[in-house]
Every structure is written in C-alpha cells, then in structure tokens.
Image 1 (tube, rainbow, N blue to C red):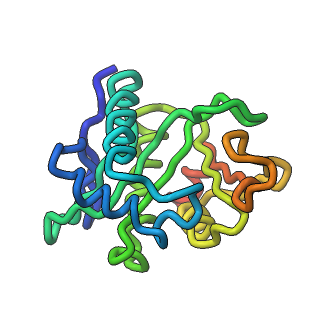
Image 2: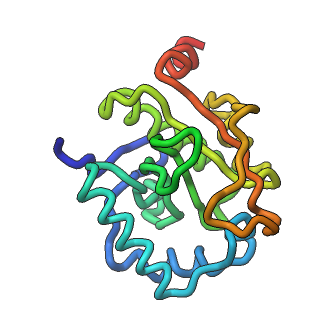
Image 3: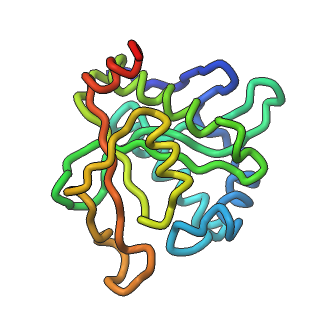
Length: 189
C-alpha cells in the first residue's frame, strides 16, 4: 500500500513531518501543561527520537501520526493520527487514534476536527474495522475529544498501562472504541 502522506480538513492540513517542525514540537513536548497526562515532558533529543519513530511507522505501515498545520496561518500546532498499539493488552493488536496539540491551540476544536479526519481515513482509505483510543483516567479533556468523535467507552476494557509503574498516578487507563458501523452511524447522525 502506498503511504498516506497527507490528509485535509476544513481548517487543517495533516502532513508529513518536516525537519523544521522540531523546534515547535520540542517546545510543545517540553510544556508541563501539555505533557501533564504523560509520564514526563520530553527533551529536544527525546522529541527528535519521537519524530524518528513516527517516520518509521509511516515507512512500515503507510500511516501514522501526521504533523498538524493550520491552513489559515501555516502554523505547526501538534500531531494527530493513527498508529499500531505498541504494547500487549487485552484489546491488542489494535490501531489507536491519538493527538497532542500546543496549548495556545486548545479549545478551538482542532483536536476533534483532526481526529475526525483520521477516522475517515481509518475506515475509508485503510479499511480498518475498529479504532481504539486510551488515556489516563484523569485525562478528561482527551476523553471529551474521544466522545466528540463518536467513540464509546469500553467500561470492561479499562486497564493499567504496562509501561508505567503500578503505583504511578497515570497508570489506570480508560479505553474507548469505535467500529466502522458506529462511525457510519455518526455520519448519518
């Protein structure tokens, strides 16, 4: 399959990563507010390594976490996309949808708009049957995005993230799902 290098929504371009995205992305990943639901903020080197892993996912699977760019200003604002879950859990193997936006772009509907565009790609171009999303129990903003794009919480699917220590406050995670039929229903909705 040819890689899906670009997607577009009304206000956003979901595109491949450019080398000059690193400074803005490193600032985003170093922001303690943005990273409060992750184990720790990332250094510039860790952020560069993350971009490398994202590019590797695209090379292997043809899709991944796209860089987000505002059409009106050309500003890099974060990432949104689809990736294979990289750990074992009762719901894996699975493809997850995720997002991370710079704080100054919060509350404008960009996360939901970009995520909706990714779901259209997942069920349309990629032909997936299901997409999952998960986050720490305390991350209510991300859960609101999951709900806004039609995902349903799988109450029986909540889990402790295997890459975090058992006593870490972010270890308990919630699981959301959406399948092709649910997505089609939201389109009719």
